[in-house]
Image 1 (cartoon, rainbow, N blue to C red):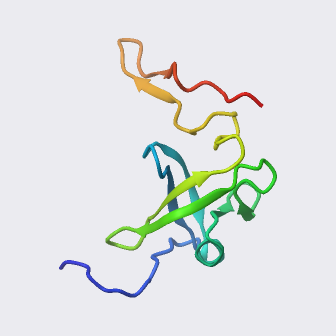
Image 2 (image 1 turned 60 degrees about the vertical axis):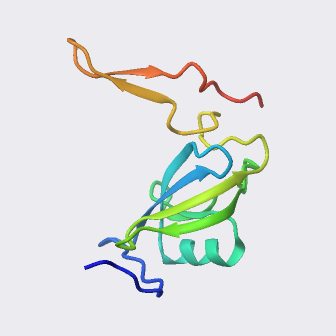
Length: 130
């Protein structure tokens, strides 16, 4: 059956979270994958800025509140099963996203070889100047 309802009915998992993928609105680059609970999703919708649930800190997290890298939501989507959220954002401050100082959390490629999988850092994914 094709899902066509117009009601927002997020499918949170057994611990009350839904994955949220953030991409840069201009370039389409994947910035990060985070998690939202119902409060984070509601605050994101209400404020137009990205809010997540920090699993490590077990608290609500306003992305960029301390770093200045506020994610302004330009478009918010939910997938066909309503169990994944996609945020198209513009990033304030230095434009960074990752705690390593890079613009994206996805700065390494997985390579396979005779010794098994290894990671290769992408040459264009250098930390931003701070």
